[in-house]
Length: 404
Picture 1 (cartoon, one colour):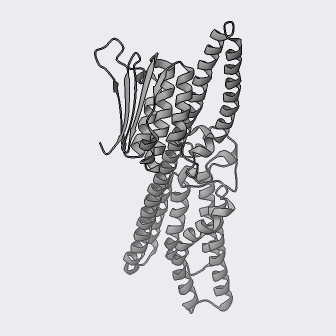
Picture 2 (cartoon, helix red, strand yellow):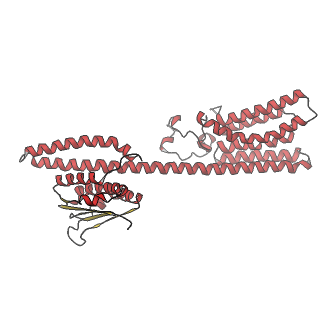
Picture 3 (cartoon, helix red, strand yellow):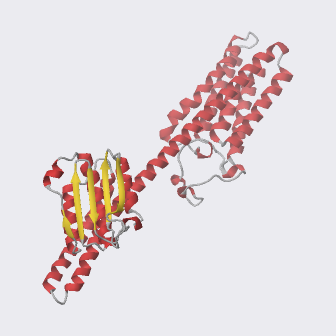
């Protein structure tokens, strides 16, 4: 229920805190999410949906025009009152709270009093046919308030209509007065329920899509910048060891670090584009070259696959293998303390084996989940095991396989 309605506050997202600016709040929806002022781009659709119920006013309009008891002036006034009713009803969906100092439910009640007053004063033949306004009054309650307030307001409208029909309608007309009242209200309730489910489903899909985007962005940042930063750390340590004994080589290593920093800045700028569907995928050939450079800088001997093995890969498998290789090499440099790495590729499988301490990849907070997510998305399987179980340094074996 809306905080102005006197009920419990709804659960809010981070952007819906009380301090959030009006333009930061959800612009449309049902119940509490319905805006105090409907945005222009949503008015046509909303007014068309709300205006459907105006069909029910054709009954009192027809009765008024066919009545022999009223002259042209009275009939004109009555039709004008019905038109004013329609205008006020539609305005109520654009400006939910014309009096901001009052809670929303009070504004809705005020709208309803004005609507009923217009009909009673302007349509002398309305009589008990005023119960035909029930769909409008219930719609104002149900679509602009949460279920607790909406059902309470709807119950009040129905109860008032039943009392009016029972005490003032002729006995032979009561059944025909009850039927449209009950049927129309039940239909309004069904539409509100269906719309609410659709709204919740749409919101859930948006949240899932946003979560997926965040995870993809996090993987890209972790994979791309993590690899570059790891390589820079290795090169800085190497330069530190060489600065006294081989200053020229140390200077060359620092020059490479400078180049890596520039490349990392460029990579950070392109991460957002890389997450998009139209971004150019990673290639295994490029990642193998980068892996060789990184492992060589870390003094780790490397055995690479042949170019023939790479030529048989499909673009999808190439991209998956490239991303997983980048992450595997980053973790080897960070954690494994390996002296040798073997990388093998065939049309359906990538295998990376090191002779390090073993279990290193399992300690990384993002590496395994990132590789696993990429493999699952491509219908592949990821396996991370000890390369030589039982040994003091069992090493680690990373396998990404399709169709196994």
